[in-house]
Each structure stands twice: as structure tokens, then as C-alpha cells.
Length: 561
Image (cartoon, rainbow, N blue to C red; front, side, top):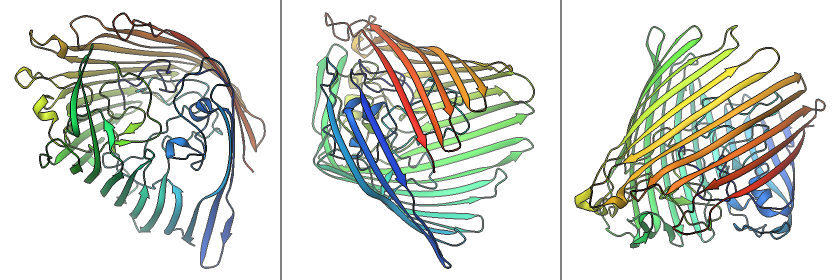
């Protein structure tokens, strides 16, 4: 999700990955034996993975581990838990795994493919379902703001971008017929030990390959096993915990059942005017809730227009994401041992929890608009992109609303029923690139603001903070096989959450530099160095300051035979 990302120090605010002392080694080998027959083709994916040294660094600061070794996918091979050791070696461990990761069989023309094991969906509507995001920070020679309008850190064309999501585990079939592609899948989702989460989906897309596309998708998700602790109020054993930042909701829940149906269409609405329509409806039920039978259906609505004229393009998007839409609570990975503070609470889908849909740019229980404008391409070395979004709370989160099954608000805490107010969020973004022959210089700026007024007798309901982020990058493609970059980044937040005075004030400054080298047709290397310094006021009154510094050196080699 977009704003804000990082829950608490010592976490890197740009990636939400913890920073701990220690060295780690990570290796992976993927083999893909392929059989080409007269009637069909078949393939098996075999993997071997090794981890040695700091488990936390290996899990967060390298490539995503093999699924059978990755603790965020439920693997118990590594003795992993969130710790912040004072000395290198305190969280060291070693693990080696070899496994069959998947297999597929397909028709000779490729129009029918059956897969089993670990896989990524071929197609999905992001307002119906997205796979859970990776929890690691993949190696790169640059960084970007979480809501960047840019194209990502500098890289060689030969350096493939790592997958942004974790794979699913189950079976999947894809069939093509003319312009239509059908897909059906049944798979397990990442879940905490002792719990389970499973999804089934069916989708169809008709793509005319010239800007006209239609699609529909149905999703069914169920959870089971142990009850899970949540930061919503509608679960069983609900309570409000007093804190310096307001009354924080806590409850436990289990046996969730979510169904979502969505349909979308992209088409030419006029000369040089393209349109996109997305409509979704969902239902939700769960066991062990505060008020059984109070759940409601929720909706998602998106209407977008875009226009291109030469180097310039402009877009307008209208959104409505209701409080009861796509609201299943799906924790995975390892729960973090941090005291949530203003910039993460309640943040149900931060880090080790995720929402079933892509909730950027509009979060749950929000409605509003986003405008975009860009000038890029052609012979000009200048590339400028800007956007602005304005989203308002649809329904106030009160003690009564928050007890209704499935009611979620993305960031605001519950208010007394007779003191309800509505909040608003603004998003600003600018990406400017200057690309002369000798180098590339980019400036990546974003800012989020969150505001909710409070009546005079309830100052603890006040929310008013700003979240400015900036990245300045200098990069140069020295030749076709070598690219270098260096830059400075800053991520900050200042304002009030749950009080009438400034109780959130922090910033992280990061300097980075890196190289990517294509050594041969079969080998590439990456080397990157980051230095981060975090400073801010205590997160609790009279508490210790959250200040820290950290240096990270990453070296990665890739071989393809």
C-alpha cells in the first residue's frame, strides 16, 4: 500500500525491511528440464537453495528465497523470527533445501497449459485479487519513493526485475481460444503457522490487442485453523487499548469467508481518448466476531480516462472503495515485535498482512479522484510526470461501525458515536528526469497528507500529518555492459496522531551507490552500498529516541545457462 510504509525503527522506511548487524550468504539454483513431444510439451522446475549467516538479512535483503525455504511462505527450515541483535552472529543459521518446485504440461500450440506446484497467475484483475507482495527488498543500485511515478532504479536491460509478489501453491489451468483467455486456479495463500488460507479463482479476458479489452473474474477465499489477532474491533474478544496515541482496537478472528466478483472494460471512448471501467462487489463473513450477522456487501468502482497527444499524456481517475470491500484479514510471514505507532496504526495490510486487492492509490473506505500529466519521449532529454489525488473517508469509523463484521478503515482509529468526523488524504507526486548523453539525473518527489479533525472534547481523535519523500539519483550507462548510480534519499513524517500536539516527527536520510556489470552472455553482477541515518522524537512520552544508523553492502551474481 502507499502511505505510510514503515512501522517502527530500526526498519528501513523505503522498503520496510529490518536493519540488523550481520553477514548473510544466499544461493539458489533453478533447473528447468523440458520435454518436447509430438502431442504435448512438459516441463519440471527443480530448485536448490542455501542460506548461511544472518537469517534476518538473508530473508529481507537478498532475492526472495526459494518457496520451500522462505519463512514468509510458511517454511520452517530457517529458525526465523524478528529480532534486533546487538552483535553480528546473534541470529545466524544455516539451511539447505532441494525440491521440485513445479511442473507443467501444455499443448503443442501453447493454447492449453496445466501447472502444479508454485506458480504466478497468468491474468488477474488487481481490484479482485493480487498475490501477496514480497517482504524482502530485492537488490538494486538505486531506490525510489513508494509511490513513485518513475520507472524504477537504474538497471541494465539484461538485468531482469525480480517478481514483486510471492508465488501461489496449487494447481492452475490456462486455455486460449481466439481473442479469449480463460484461467482457473486453486491454491494456498501464505499464512501464519497453525492457520490456513486458500483461494479459488476463475477469470476470462477478451483482448483485441489495440486498446480494447474486456474481462471478468470471480474469487473465493477461506481461512481456517487458529484464531488470529487483528487490529480491528469487529472480531471476538474485542477491546480498546488506551495509549498515548488514542484507543487502539484489538480482537481475534477466524473462519473468514470472502467472495469477490469483478468486471472491467478498456476501450476507446473517442478520438485519442481511452477509457477504463472497473466494478467489483464482495461479501464477507467470519467466525468469532463481536456482532454476528452485521456484515454487508461492499463495492469497488473505478472510472478512468486518458488522452495522449504527441509527447504529452493526461489522465483522470475516479474511485470509490467501500469499507466492506475486499476486507479479509490475511496475516502471513512472521509477526513483527514492534509497538505500532502513528504512521502504521491501524494499517491492517502493512508488512505481514495484506489485502486481497491492490489498494493503491485508493485505500479502503475512501472515495475521490486522481489526475496525472506527463511529458516524455521524443528527442527531448527532459521527462516530467506529475499527479495529484484527493481521497475522502466515505463513512466515519465509530465505535458502533467498527463493531460491524467487516467494517475497516485504512488508518483512522474509532471515534465515539456522537463525535464522528470525516478525514481526508491528499497525494502529490513529481518525477523529473534529465537525460543528456553523458548521464541520467532524476528527481523523485512524493508527499502524502492525512487529516481528520476532532471536536473540542475529543482531542485524541485528531489526525494531521505530512509524509514528504524525495530521491535524487545520478546514473550513467558507461557502456552496454556497465551502469553506475549514486544518490540521496529522504523519507520523513511530521504531525500529530491521537493528540492535539506534534507527537510524530522523524526522518530517514539514505545515501546509496551501486554498479551493475554484464560480465558475459551468461553472467551478470550487482554491487550496491547504502548508508541510512534515522532520527526522530520518542514514540512514547519520555521514551527512548528511535535514532539509528546502518550500513548495508549487497553483492549479487546471476548465471543463466
